[in-house]
Image (tube, rainbow, N blue to C red):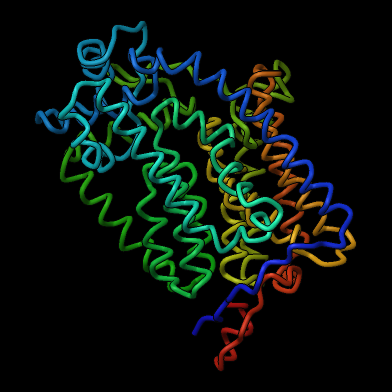
Length: 434
């Protein structure tokens, strides 16, 4: 049986000087964030309407499924031919490298012309952001007490979210699924949380690390994940067949740079230094000094160490708080990751900041450090404009936040007075903190 976690009333006043500074920092930085991204929208939006967006790959993949071309879904030449014909002519096609079930979900958009479909998908993403706000609202009460518009302003001015909106990316859908899973864990619905995460397998690089941690927890969320992931993979296999499933796996390794692409497979260059994860950090810090194979081995070893540390500590934390650590760890160890994928970090950023700002008489320490790192992560993606060739440095505050969350270990449940845990009668649940 799972512990019931409930929220208490927000604390409008805090005695922590650090919390006050963080609150004032957030209020002060929002106009700058808004202005910078407004110029981004003005510059990019016309290009997106003419086909220069990531949405072209989702749109074309959905068209291929609707027109009975699932057997060519991962054929690069077929993708390029259709993207040129349906969207706009470009030197390179944007390869579709997701499980086929996502293309099935996108089929309704392929019934419209590209421009109309892009606008409809933008409207859907805005609706999903509103859903995220509704789901996380009980966990942003202290932010709202500081300024009623602060939570929605942070949600809509986080740069990765805006990039996802502009590009027509599916990262906001994953954000909504993980937010719903966080809320489900907060109310003790572990099976539902696992099922929601499993539906996000279109972002394999983020969801698989979370799945590994789920199975290490050995709780009911494992069964939920197994059921929903089996369903999505079954749909994918049914749509494309076994031969294309093999091509999909080969394409994953090819786009990640682990193997050379075969004929009619993905031929698309990836800049590793644009990845705010361990792989990007290792590649950026050792640029020109280590071979690609050495960087790959070092990244795998570091990622394994991070997952091992997370597995050791997660069982000592309440389920919802463990989800914050799992999301952060998944970003750190993801094999490839771009700025729009960082949208999922909004969940730990908002929750950690809200809890710390609500503290009365906080003394700093790890609690204050976690809040400072969360605030820095809210701003750090601006590095894309300031130092685009070194965007990998954004991985440093992410790793710092993960380390801070890990160092707290089993103390996390008693850190923030905004939440209290009512233990039920099962001794085993008390032992595992669930």
